[in-house]
Length: 289
Image 1 (cartoon, rainbow, N blue to C red):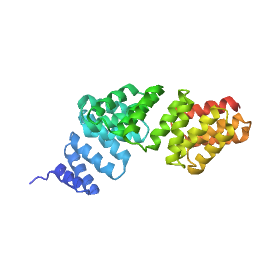
Image 2 (cartoon, rainbow, N blue to C red):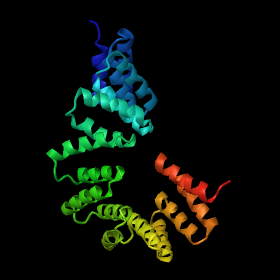
Image 3 (tube, rainbow, N blue to C red):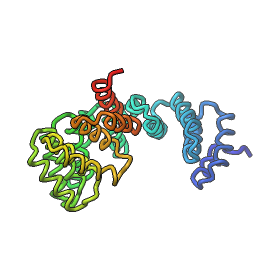
Image 4 (cartoon, one colour):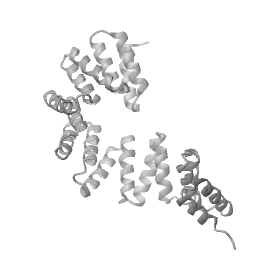
């Protein structure tokens, strides 16, 4: 009786016996090189073993045989995202949503992928649809606020962050985000109010400390700014934003050598390509070669 290598491999995969699954799925592929699902399942086995290059190769082979294989598309997009190959991740995600626009997993993937390629309007459409079914989901409300912030619309961002805070009254990061957007909008009194609220609840939280420090710098209170940003760095020495803001304040008070060191550290820690460009512009402006 002929063995069904695919089914045997599939069963091993379901029982978390990944190496044995690969062995039998490979036999299935050798027997039928057009078996898209065998490639996809072998890709999953490699994925679970954290062998991502092999997983990617198998997902791509599966999709070359069947471009509508959503599980392969989803997992390949996820790997692209971890590799920061965001354009490729976005392409696969768009295909997924075209194939199944109501799939919640694909929508949440879109919320991760589309902002990374600055397709904020697509992300906004997704979050609006998700909020219809979950109107009090604070994570979704936060995400909508963040999308508006990314669209340089601080007023609308503040509205949504406040909606989240009405549900989760002690969410320090929502308070921080309101303060940050209020600072961008030039509403310093509102920014101060929410930074103070955040720090009353969590006095050592590095983000409101850093952002409050930058607000004080904008007000011309550089001594207070240094104090707050220093405290932020003491609580989180990997906070790239605090190093950048410290560099800005140190430049303002004429401490160029220390400013250069802090801006270099901000660049070393990094965040996004746009952020790195912003720090590089500061370095080029104040420290031309």
